Length: 213
Image (cartoon, rainbow, N blue to C red; front, side, top):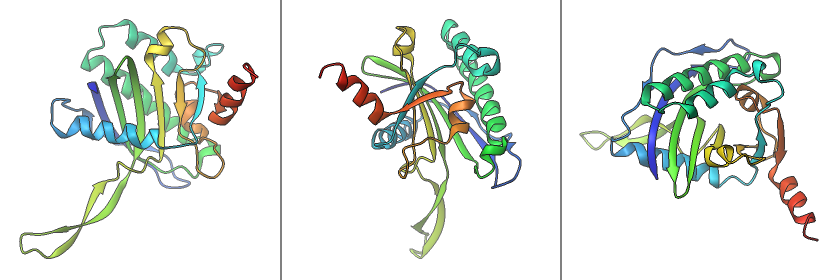
């Protein structure tokens, strides 16, 4: 994996409360030894999910979804670190607005990770929502103590943009994480990024399979 850019921000939100964008965070040095491993862990966690939902941008109503134009602008630029930070800042703003919609009153915040990377022949943008978990560590006296760490194995929400497929004009280039119970995505996440027409993976498989039977 070649990690091009990484931005980490934070959204504060409790159930039935307004969303607040933290001033903390921003661009992260991709040359730090643990950073590529972190993104790889997130990507693997998403790949393990069997309930991904797929879709494409709502190109018929782009003015209602500012991220679409911002994404196109980013791809047409030199894609510098500052360009990616600008795209991520708009993304977090759209996420906060979507989380404040009446249908998302139960949504809860966390850390929002934006990663632009190349894996084999494909280029991707990954957006993931993760939170802390409690863990046990040993202090200098070897006494157990409780610590907080980022839970990279548990994605609460995620979106993956296949940039290569998008540039080639493919029909489906967006993937969203679904719930284990219903296979549905939490729609504030897809709406924030301009995807309003989504299809569960099983339906896509059945539709593709029917062409050859």
